[in-house]
Amino acid sequence: MRYLVVGCGLSGGVVARELAERGEEVTIWDRRDHIGGNMYDYRDPESGYLVQRYGPHTFHTSDKSLYDYMCRFSEWDGYILRCGAVWDGEYTPTPFNFTTIDTFFPEAEAAEIKARVAEVYPGRETVTVVEALGSEDHVIRGYAEYLFEKDYRPYTSKQWGIPPAEIDPSVLKRVPLRMSYGDRYFDDTYQVMPRTTFVDFFRRLLDHPNIAVELGVEALDRLRIEDGRVVVDGMPDVHVVYTGALDELFGFVHGRLPYRSLEFEFRRSDQDSFQPAPVVAYPSDPEVVRITEYKKLPVQEGDGTVYALERSLEYEPGKGLEPYYPVLTEESKAVYEGYRSMAESVDNLSFCGRLADFRYYNMDQALRRALELAATL
Ligand SMILES: Cc1cc2nc3c(=O)[nH]c(=O)nc-3n(C[C@H](O)[C@H](O)[C@H](O)COP(=O)(O)OP(=O)(O)OC[C@H]3O[C@@H](n4cnc5c(N)ncnc54)[C@H](O)[C@@H]3O)c2cc1C
Image 1 (tube, rainbow, N blue to C red):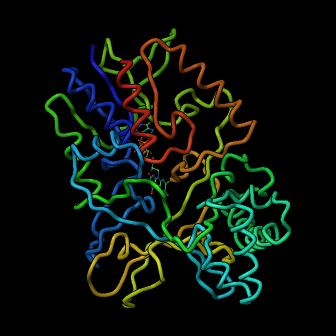
Image 2 (image 1 turned 135 degrees about the horizontal axis):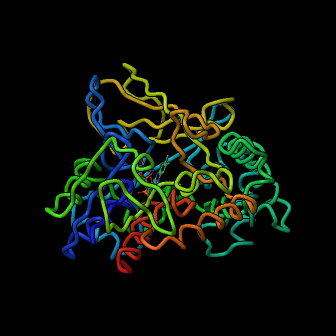
């Protein structure tokens, strides 16, 4: 038996490595011209700064076994990501914290909000926005409503292209408010960046005599599903691990799965610093969702700076866009279930990854899922 892994991102790379270490022969195809999927990074040819083509990535997890797995293939340095948002000309850290309250409210009002929070949520480091919006305390609710109007409402509708009320609550529920001056973006035990590059991590992950990587290969041109099996040109008796989108794989027979895409516009500047943090959201800008300043992710020394403006738009297949964020609604989940059961009924097909599972996975979640799948093959 031979294995074909479609997709050379974290999910495909990890499944391939696990199979290869068990003595299996694995071919990986990716339609892109590089390894690493959305974690791909490279040196900007003019400035020399390391940038990430598909948006800012920091590896974070509280699961030591996942961190240890990443350490097998790269050295990592601790890096505490700090993010922020700007509106009314003022910068605040995100998740919103006591600095946010001090920045946007007069002193007496700010003191009252912080006092109410301490009383209503004693000992809590974070509270979800949804919880604060539903609070019976009118001061806390007022604070949450202010943030909702200034940030969450414009940001969410720009990011998702739909009114916030229609967004699956699982997306909004995750958003925390900090009940302190703490300004870490993530709370996980391990928060790291590769000492060199994410691509170096992938080079070592894929560096195994049983793994062959072929780039610039569109799998859909070379495989089809016939009589409950995936048939791959030139590969009889193959098991396929698919990490692309299932609606594409099945020719959209149940309709399209909705995704949001992103457009990244890279700019260089002679300024030493463009913004106060590496990743800053601009909720009141009519188009730009957020800007990542790569010089600060993590800190790189040098002249000038490089940053990428991020605009969110609807994903449409065949238009040169990438599907980034699944739009999770009751309807889209039902459509996905149709594809999932089709995929499960194909004998020699397995699937995992953020596209094939139609889930928003952080890297550690994609890694866990890939390891679990590989264990079953
Ligand atoms: C803007 C952004 C920021 C993020 N930041 C973070 C972060 O800070 N921390 C974090 O933990 N996670 C972050 N993530 C999530 C992270 O990118 C994913 O968890 C991870 O990349 C998932 O890997 P994957 O292999 O499942 O998917 P991908 O990286 O998308 O890989 C799938 C690959 O399959 C290929 N493919 C698909 N279909 C086909 C086909 N038919 N033929 C050939 N090839 C195909 C694609 O070209 C792609 O390379 C971020 C995601 C985005 C979009």
